[in-house]
Image 1: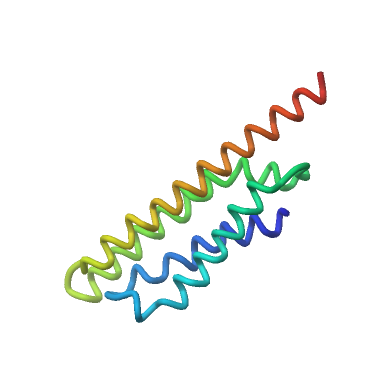
Image 2: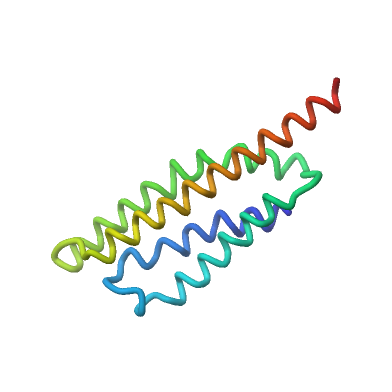
Length: 126
């Protein structure tokens, strides 16, 4: 399960690549692969019954990973796209907001599942 959750977090990096393009047709493969990886990670987090301590610690670290790496990287890619194409294309702006929604969804689900499993461990210890 830890590997599937990590695939989901790395899928956010793959999903960020289309920000550099001006249309979806140029980067449909990155969108498909990254979206599939993020979906695998979300499903793995939702279906996890008894996570290992490694999976729990990674789920605790996940929001910080997104805020410290993926969010600044998406802003950097948007800036590179604007320099490369002499301005920000409408596709890049629309896509970056969709990408941010994917990041937000991934963070919210990881935090919720972490809290649920943390409560289970607290009840088991009591």
